[in-house]
Image 1: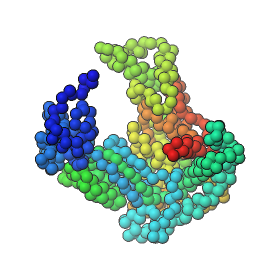
Image 2: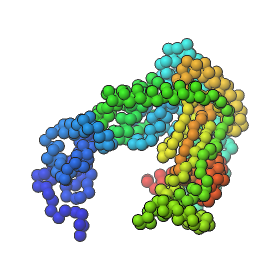
Image 3: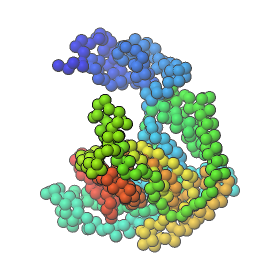
Image 4: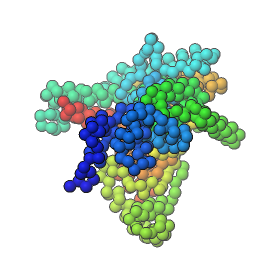
Length: 545
């Protein structure tokens, strides 16, 4: 017998018929809310917490006869009472097409309540033109200034070099890594065989798809450094009203016209589906918040200008700059491990007892928890969140875009400049286009140096992905497991794989016992990063047929 399910329904036959259009069932104690209006779904959830009525009864008694009930409820709760949490009950999906890589990073800075899917620079060639022009953002401030022609010429040059080398780079990659070098699955016996040994036409076709996909991805990965930050991309966003409202406020406070315009456009579309949840983004409260954000930025800029002497250094940097001693770190983690299963004992009491334990016993405990992880998706417990690492980083902007996706950490970044130089992939040199690459970078630097004097933020648009970008990341050991194991998988971009491997080596050096929890960091190098992943994708595709 299911003791959670009511024996007798509280609803009449007539009521059940009405409810069936708004809820997934009318009798069960677990049900989905399917009423068409998003504002009503959220309002029902919120109203639910303030009454002893069942949700379906609330709908019948309070919402059915008043079509504006949901919106009225939110106007009262959000505006009169200021209960921000209820704004999380409204959700929306927004697609933004044709925004720069500067603006999309500002959007993706938001850590909580929003999820993103962005156009890939690995699977999609960004060389298409629209009305005869490359697709990059043309900032109004720059385009009405004396720098307009220079800016457009520089961005066009970057795209020209990128575009004309796509096919040569693909051909080079395929010449360096010929298909005959790799094994593919034979559907007849299920064994991996060299390409030349495949007999089945379907297997040969699949092998070619896998090979072409992985070699194209490799070529585009190598060339992406040529793209300027003005390159237009697409992003899909899913999130709740509270998070969207904050995003709109941040964008509205920006000094960039693009981001201000995006705030207005996103707000206009959200008003069509979750208006009640985002109405404060540009009202008097929203305007005051925008002013506060600008004041914080300006105050920081003023203090920094007075206290800090600029000292730009060229090259890349991956350096662990802040951490605790391993002894202290182990004590904290083991205390946290034991805390949940130590009834009626305070954290402080457990910590004092742990400190008295022999170190060999403590390291054995860490080893035992490491053994429990059988794959990288088996994340360590929250006990491993008690220890933090801070890394000072200069990496190319293209690579930063990948690390920026990690949000369970603290990441602070500076403006994108040409101050820290760039790195040239070896494949660029071997293909014989090193001069083109350098000409592109030099032209960018010349243009940027002129624009930045008057438009420091707008100048970012012209800077190429290959230029090194300064930022720092602070994350706990649990997040280190996720980040470093994920970013060293074979299919990862060679740039961020190297940085993640360097991070692991540095953590391992200062915390040799604790680093054992990161069991699935891959320190190997691979020829075609996407090859094995493409094979797995093709196998899944076959099964769906």
